Image 1 (cartoon, protein in one colour):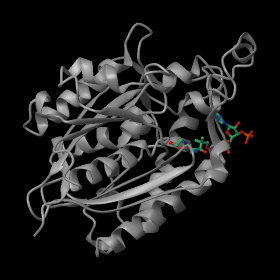
Image 2 (image 1 turned 90 degrees about the vertical axis):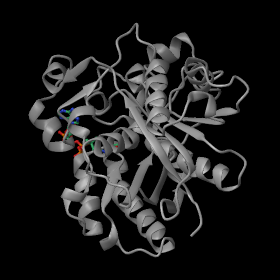
Image 3 (image 1 turned 90 degrees about the horizontal axis):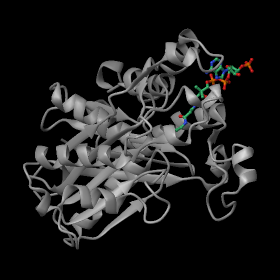
Image 4 (image 1 turned 180 degrees about the horizontal axis):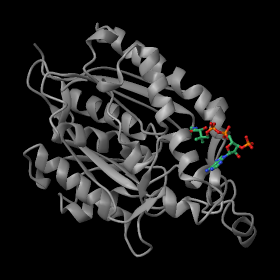
Length: 328
Ligand code: UT7
């Protein structure tokens, strides 16, 4: 049996500051009842103004490296999946690399693929390992969306939280590792989720700040309508490639965007919710960090065991979507 690349270690980190639905009731015209019923979210973690998001990425990465039984000096490639980098130039990766004190000459890059960024980066990392180019690839999902949240817009400010998750991808013992994947996208839907200004199309100016164009905007119900179908489609394609049926799935670790989306996906896949990892109630939508945070919790509490068939599935801005099937 051939050795496949897989997740050898997983780590996560979230800010200590908790923002509850009750706190949000004081900021915008919303209610704990609405947020809970429509999203499943009860609270989220938000960085304080003086906290550096890169520190979260570094802590999550350290956890993953330790979990894999490796030393930071053994990492030979870093991919950081994020929507909102530390700095537009040079992104987030150099700060994580520096903070980890891994060898300074290793290659790194940031990958932008919306909330699907972690799934995309995991596939890229697995391909780098498969090709034999690199041995231990670190993938970090780092998100500080609170820094781009309009705290006057109730349709978005209740949805997101800050956090980081990381995995080390390397060749696994025979039988374990990534069995199949399916990545997809639909560029016609790019406008559903966006930050209008601050890029080269609309550079920052006094007017863009006055028009609040630096905040995240979302056509939530449009995203909602496509999300379930997109995750179902890529999960079924990946399962087919892995020559497995949906009844052989032990765990689904979905992107944590909305509990209603997650339960609808489980229903479409005919999988009981007991087999679905959910923590959106405590962290809200942490974008590229949501899957590795959920994964680490489920490994720590003993739900996910070696040999289990695990499906990771996400969707996000772009729009991008994708699923990965692996044997833990
Ligand atoms: O990671 C990918 C990123 N994006 C997502 O995953 C988002 C996917 N979409 C969603 O999760 C849901 O569409 C939302 C949670 C964003 C919204 O739920 P919905 O059931 O699609 O609600 P809606 O947007 O259709 O709004 C229903 C009503 C509206 O009022 P009217 O027009 O019916 O009077 C909104 O103004 O709910 C109102 N509303 C709120 N009310 C209280 C919207 N946000 C809030 C709020 N509190 N925070």
